[in-house]
Every structure is written in C-alpha cells, then in structure tokens.
Amino acid sequence: MSQEQQREPIAVIGTGYVGLVTAAGFAELGNEVWCVDIDASKIERLKRGEIPIYEPGLAESIAANAERLHFSTELGPALEHARLLFVAVGTPPTYSGDADLSAVHAVVDAMPVSDRHALVMKSTVPVGTGASIRRAFAARGKEGFRYVSCPEFLKEGSALADFRKPDRVVVGDDGDWAGDAVVDLYAPLGAPLVRTDVRSAEMVKLASNAFLATKISFINEIANVCEETGADVEEVARGMGLDERIGAKFLRPGIGYGGSCFPKDVSALKLLAGNSGYHFQLLNAVIEVNELQKRRVIRKLQKHLGTLVGKRITLLGLAFKANTDDMREASSLVLASRLQGEGAIVSAYDPLAEQEARTLMPGVEFADSAIGALDGADAAVLVTEWPEFQQLDWTAAGERMAGKLVIDGRNHLDPAALRDAGFDYEGVGRGS
Ligand SMILES: NC(=O)c1ccc[n+]([C@@H]2O[C@H](COP(=O)([O-])OP(=O)(O)OC[C@H]3O[C@@H](n4cnc5c(N)ncnc54)[C@H](O)[C@@H]3O)[C@@H](O)[C@H]2O)c1
Ligand SMILES: O=c1ccn([C@@H]2O[C@H](COP(=O)(O)OP(=O)(O)O[C@H]3O[C@H](CO)[C@@H](O)[C@H](O)[C@H]3O)[C@@H](O)[C@H]2O)c(=O)[nH]1
Image (cartoon, rainbow, N blue to C red):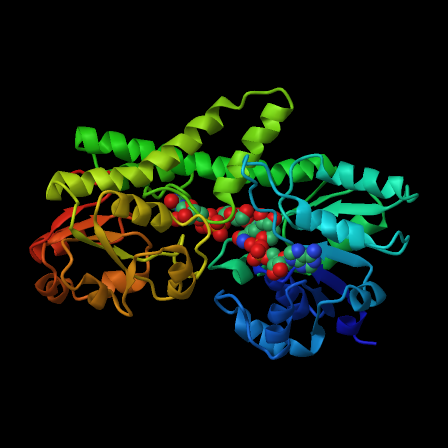
C-alpha cells in the first residue's frame, strides 16, 4: 500500500469556508474526505463540481482531488468511513453577542455514542464548549468520548494558502488517540505545533482574533490622531511595523474591521469574560472604535458636500475585504444604510459580492463596472481594496462624475495621482 493510501480518512461536517478549505487541504495531502452538510442544494452543487463560495484556488484544488472528496447530506457514510469528525459548522452571533452554538449542538445530538469516533472542533466556540459537550456525552452514558479542539486560523481570500502553510497548528485534547491522530494528520505541513488542553486551545483562537482586532482599532485611532496633527499614518505604521516586537501585519488603517469572525469573536470573548465575572475593558474600546470608524466617512463626505440629501454617493467595493464574495459584517452595509439615512442616493459596484449584496442592501443601485457606478456621482467612497480600483482610469471616471471627491476608506489609492486628476482626496490618517 502506498503512503497516500494509508492516510487517515476523515469527515468534515459543514461545507462552508472552513469546511471546504479543510476538506480540500486534506484531500491534497492524500486523505479521503467525507463531507456532510444539511444544505441539500449546496451538496448537490458540490457533487456536480460547482463551488458555492469564491476562494482563490479552491475550485481548482477540489477538481484536482475530486476522487478523494465525497459529499452527502447524511452523516452515515462519514461515520462509516472516518474516526475523526471535523466540525466546521457556523457559530454566528446571537442577538446578545454570544456565539450561537445551535448548529454545533445539532451535530453533537446526531453523533452516535461510539468509542470509535472523535469530534474535532474547527468551529470557533467559547471556552468551555468542549467541556460541556463532553458532559452531554457523559449524560448519554459515554464517559470516554473523545473530543479535540483544533481551531482554524485561515483568512478568507488566502484560505487555501493558509491551510497549506499555517503559522501554527493548535491541538487541544486529553492526550489520547484522537489528539495523536489529529497531530499526525497535520504533520506533513511541518507547522509549529501547540499541543495543549481543550480550554487553552479554545482560548488561543478567541485571544488571537481579539488581539488582531485590537491592533486594527489601535492603528485606526492613531490614524484619527494623525488627521488632527498632520502626521501620515502610513509612514507611522511603516516606522512602527519595522519593530519586530510590533510587526507590520494588521497595522493597515481603514474604515474598520468586518467579516464573519472579528466582530463576532471579539464580542463573544467580551461576553465570555463578563459571564465569568471579569470585565474586559479593552475590548469595549476596540468594538466602539471599530463602530465609529465607519461613521467618520459620513462626516468626511459632509465636510466636502454639506448636506447629503439628494447627493449621489458611489461605494466602490462591498465585500468585507478583497478576494472574497463574503458580505458578512461588511463595513459597506453600515455605510450604505447611514448614507441612505442622511438622504443620499447610493450606487455601488463590487467585482464578486454583488449577488449577495443585492439581497442585503435594499435601495442601492448596482452597476456592473466601477466606471458605471461612478456615473453622475458626487463622490466615491472606496470601501474594499480591490486591485482594479488602483488601475481605474480616474481621469475618465472624473469626467463622468458630477463632483470630484474620493474618500479612500482603505488608503488604497495614490493621493498624488488623484489630486493630479483634479480630485479632492481624503484617505484615513494620511495628512492633507
Ligand atoms: N470564515 C472564516 O474565515 C473562518 C476562519 C476560522 C474559523 N471560522 C469559524 O469556523 C466556523 C465555520 O465558519 P464558516 O465561515 O465556514 O461558516 P459557513 O456559514 O460558511 O459554513 C457553515 C456550514 O455549516 C453547515 N451546517 C450548519 N448546520 C449543520 C449541521 N447540523 N450539519 C451539517 N452542516 C451544517 C451550513 O449549511 C454551512 O454550509 C465558525 O465557527 C467560524 O467562526 C471561520
Ligand atoms: O491591517 C488590517 C488587516 C485587516 N483589516 C480588516 O480586518 C477584517 C478581517 O480581515 P482578515 O483578518 O484578513 O480576514 P478574515 O478572513 O476575517 O480572517 C480573520 O478571522 C478568521 C476567522 O476567525 C481567522 O481565522 C483569521 O486568522 C483572521 O485573520 C477585514 O475587514 C479587513 O479589511 C484591517 O482593517 N486592517
């Protein structure tokens, strides 16, 4: 038998961003992967070779490894073929800001009480979730149920690359066969391994996201002070980032962090701390700065245009970041509704996220090109850092706009080039 054939078959429950990337990544390594999702239409599309989300390289990887990838709405085949069941279902925020664990509980309830299987938690869950799942199994008469926390750190837009070359692999377990098997699965990637207890692994995930979000809110506040003092935050971030203790990553100022993870995980950690009797003061500020950062755009527009009533404002980019079609917690959603609240007419363009955005942004006029969206606009707001906005012929765009104002929410454009093209340009903390 070749080494490839000997690799452990696994199951992946939930075929969203994390589940599909995990499945494709392990299939690349030679594992048979049994994927399960309750969304029948998603499974049908996957069986036909259609990939329901956009993630660079994912379609190609799934096509190249199709023989090792199996898709079903039934848990049965997964349980039959695999010992390790990777759970990658959603844990969205509830109204109160806690993580909604109903999908995780649905998976736990569907699991047989068996010695042969172990749950490997990829979904982001509050600290203590592993312990409560083990208690639930104990109540079903299964004391020795195996549970591994193996949090996922991929970033959308580079998810497959992150799987192939992770900064670290974190495995939280009781030191039993299931933890050993997960360590073996990841071994070919050669990543640093943190093997620890379940609660600490759960906390590594929440603390990492909270720290990164804190870094972003910090640089956003520095940017705001730069606007008051005439310093250029891009130069400041460059100077800070070269200090190895600080590091250059996640120091890009902008209109706040969005996406399916940072907002929900920061809030979940804050509530987890609160529920445990600790007031996590820093995270309150991180969240508040992030909310206010989006609203500063409105003030910048008003500074130049006066009232926004009847003004036509174009949002360039809608997805929460470039290279994804994901609209979850995108800053564009807040901006569009605030602009509409001020009486503005909002037009928009995004190269990938339009379809999803249409369902979330009532009253917004969508165009199929940046230049089309800018037609007749009084101002453009760059929301997502798509490379095509740097390549846009801004002189031609300016000729079609009613006013020549660009608010660059990601410091993505060249201020000098825009000013040469006759625009008023405002970035975030870029001086004047
Ligand atoms: N998206 C990211 O960048 C990212 C990165 C790291 C961790 N995470 C965490 O991973 C988890 C999954 O995130 P995602 O973005 O992949 O979510 P997603 O919404 O894209 O996918 C979740 C999938 O689970 C399926 N599902 C729901 N209940 C199910 C059930 N009972 N059985 C089988 N399938 C079920 C859904 O139909 C959906 O396809 C979350 O906890 C998230 O916080 C996400
Ligand atoms: O310097 C920066 C970096 C990011 N962002 C914003 O932060 C948000 C999140 O970006 P990013 O972290 O690149 O994307 P995600 O796919 O949400 O990934 C985060 O959330 C995932 C889910 O938990 C984790 O797995 C990843 O490690 C973590 O980076 C986006 O709105 C970005 O525009 C900034 O404003 N400035």
